[in-house]
Length: 237
Image (tube, rainbow, N blue to C red; front, side, top):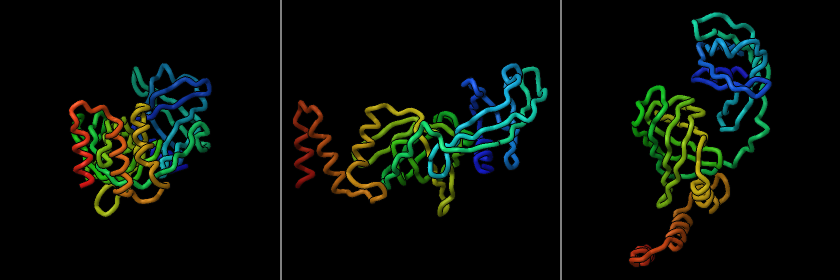
């Protein structure tokens, strides 16, 4: 539970009250199961119980239940709120997707990051993917809560999505960044599933399998000039 609270303290967090109303809070500090944050003074009122979602190291979503211990004046617009975590459980509305080891190239564009300027390109090497997210290695300094536009290239297949950084771990001088998909079009998810479906979760990617998958994808594309057939013949030569 303390790890969940610490993770929630790294970026702005949206909490929900018992009636389902959302409340945006900006963390100030955390200690153990206690979280101190600022929020809209007029909206906090007498809210007693709040919940927040956070992703673990395995990208599974957890729901943390907080009790409001105190709310004090901070400014004309903000209150300083002290919350204590009282419960934690897996989000029952989310199913953990199988993670599949997958090599590939990640190219991301920052648009809401703590240490990366909006519009900057973040390059990385993909480690694994699932229906819920992607993990990749990079040398850029990302933080939990950062949001980026993701484009992952798996040979000739490119999958695009909007992602949020859920976890960070240092591995051999680089950062392994675990992200969750916060927006992905059905067509992009279908491409991702087509790439990962060629083998069991955890099994290494096969170049021959992916090459065959790309050839099948190219065969389905309309081709008025005949260049598609030249590409296929060159591959088989």
